[in-house]
Every structure is written in structure tokens, then in C-alpha cells.
Length: 96
Image (cartoon, rainbow, N blue to C red; front, top):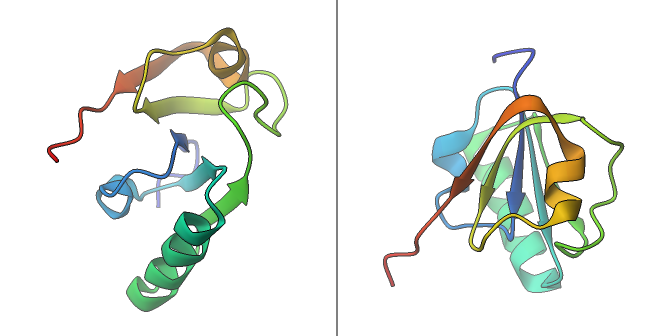
């Protein structure tokens, strides 16, 4: 685990297990995706992962909490709010 790494994923992308290392938080409006991600984390024995209901325009975290974000779309002001100054924002392109 990388103790200072705090990764936000919006929505919960299929590649999230490859991003583990430090705290990983997936946010989605899709309850089935949240349940599936929680089951996968348990199956893989990943303990520093949490998956919560939320929207890209209303992230339920404090300002500047995350060190990086992986997004399916362009970063919104709300995403930028929860990323630390100097943090990284990655736009992920689905291969489907």
C-alpha cells in the first residue's frame, strides 16, 4: 500500500483493480456497479477500497482529499475540488 495515495474513480471503471495501492474510492450512481465492485474487492482481498453512491457533480468528500482521479469524462469543477493541489487527473478511454 502507498499510504499517501488516495485515488478517486468516477464512475467505477472496469480497470479499477489495476489502480489499487493506497486508498481507492469509486463513486457511481449505479448501485449494481457498486455492489459488483465491492464483491470484486472482497474476492481479490483488497481492503483499502470503498465504493459509494454519488455523482460527478456532487462528490461526497472534502476539498483536496484525493491525490489523483481516473475519469471517464472531462473533469468537472467538483472533481477538481476534491483533488489536491498538484494532483493528477487521468481521463480513461473505455475499450468497449
